[in-house]
Image 1 (cartoon, rainbow, N blue to C red):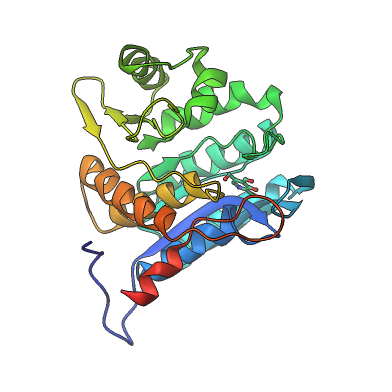
Image 2: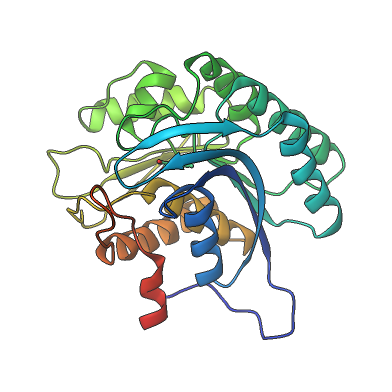
Length: 279
Ligand code: PXL
């Protein structure tokens, strides 16, 4: 596959920020995002929103970072280092979502807010909650309207819109419902449409639908897949790609990361951006 343009050594690469949770097992969350950023040649910056206690079997607990610290990390980096794109992942609570949204609105007014990919992480692949159910309203009403792109999986689509996606028609309905919440673009990922041998994702900007079909890689080791797709898409947006082109790039990247996924621990292993080192 073609990767993103690289910056010559000694010159500052583009900066992409992840506002998300830490995964002690290193497979998902901030650790997955930083791996993708590095292997795509962008400089990853971080606002840690939560710290999870987890391994390949499940999430045992999490600690929420105080809201002023989450907001402070974003502002400190945006003001000084500058960011060309950002993505959100696990945000845990309505208070944290509110702080991120407030900070983002302020940065926008100051001309410091780049494209924002909102991956509305609600639960781990084991079903362990990563977002308090009471925070769904904040996700819908505060963060979605600020997003360039939202990237829910089908479980998250159901929680956010109430629509159960079972086929192409309901996938379109869901894309319209998500877009109506305010993001510029909505991506409904079809990777969990288990009947399909393909992984059809649908992108909608309120007017046009774009379909992205990729080979479906059947692996139990898909921990961090959503994070990795959003991180690669944000990296392409930092390079000035259009949203459809950035999503197409992210989709190619996650397909290769899924192909390279490896077992770890006694449960589900992670997708692997490390394949890039062998290409
Ligand atoms: O893959 C979703 C995700 C995001 N962020 C953190 C996670 C997980 C899944 O477990 O732990 C911190």
